[in-house]
Amino acid sequence: MTLRIILMASVFPCFLSHCGQTSQDDLIERLLVRNKDSFQDILENPDLYGVQVIYTQIERDPDNRPSLRKFKYRVNPAEYFYPASTVKLPVALLSLERLNELDIPGLSKTSLMLTDSAYSGQSSVKQDTSLSPGKMNPSVAQYIKKIFLVSDNVAFNRLFEFLGPDYINNSLHGKGYTGSRIIHRLSLPLSLEENRYTNPVRFFYPENELVYQQGLIYAEQDFTPVQRILLGDGYICNDSLIREPMDFSRKNFIPLEELHDMLVSVIFPGNFDPGNLFDLTETDRKFILSCMSMYPGESQDPFYGEKYEDNYGKFLMFGDRNGKIPENIRIFNKIGLAYGFMVESAYIIDFDAGVEFFLSAMIHVNKNRIYNDGVYEYDTAGFPFMGKLGRMIHQYEKDRNRSHTPNLSDFMMNYTID
Image (cartoon, rainbow, N blue to C red; front, side, top):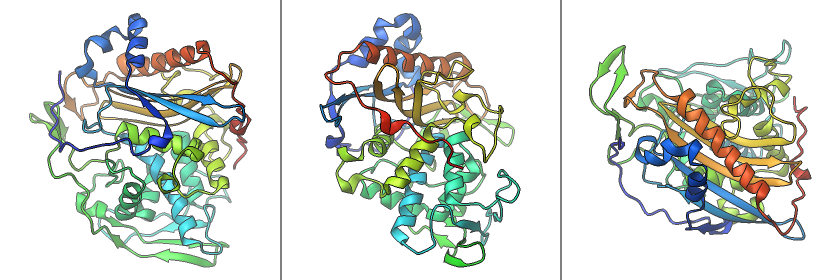
């Protein structure tokens, strides 16, 4: 099966050349072939699954400074895939950047954030009922935490409304992420026009002192592509099967390499030009890294208990394995899953083995080519591929010779961030 895609071709240079040498050899494919018992179906049906993989090796110098080398498999920035919840990564980062940009006394990621409604499809938020009694103040910090812990869609929507599509997309494009577009909320049946209006927002510190407010904002720019993006053979709409390709032209998109580089820029900001970085303080960065790598069961507020396994938001290495993730492994990442598309970008550390690497991957598991029917091969193809891919690269890294053992102490996070 070949996905039917109508998309304007674009030139996509490696604008982040400083983030790592891009290798043109076939390392990833050779590793897949070497492990063909695990990946035979993928290798024999590349168009069926549309797999894309990016793997970045990290070499440390005697002073522990990293240099990066990037390897790619079937990566094509013009080949559309639905990014699902991976769009939450840049929006979380931009929310912190926006607060720093405003630079208002009393306005911070922990300030009380109240969302109002002023247009069709909007809803207001006065308290966060997922938090403990007496601590139900919604805030940018709590929304970011829930985005990474359990990929909370409501939390994303609140931050999307705080920023608005114009700010989000102009900021990303200004950093060089010109292939990305984030133009709609998640899990809400809103029109394109409704998504262009974002809610009024107020911030308070202390709880009764208004420190910043913004009214209803309308996104003036249209970030939808000129040409249509049509996928599949049909889709379900209002419980009826429509026998024609589904139009993804008005859906979000982040090319895999842009998603990968966004993550790398947070982990190793010193490897990037300042103009390509998100404007984060070091405190912001540590907060993001803690949220990214924390397991739901480690959070005290919100308290999830045993509701979610450690691997709930960790597809690579552990997507097909439930239970506790070993203590020596930490994964700093963001996943996405919808419409049969599975996506993840991750920085993976094995403290015991002295191993670190970046791995991003996308696979499409929708053999019947029908969208919105809930019939996707996540369990039989998607999770096994992600898990085996992560373990394959992890083993390769353990076997790979490196000149200097990395000092990974900076990534031993404090998970008591409630």
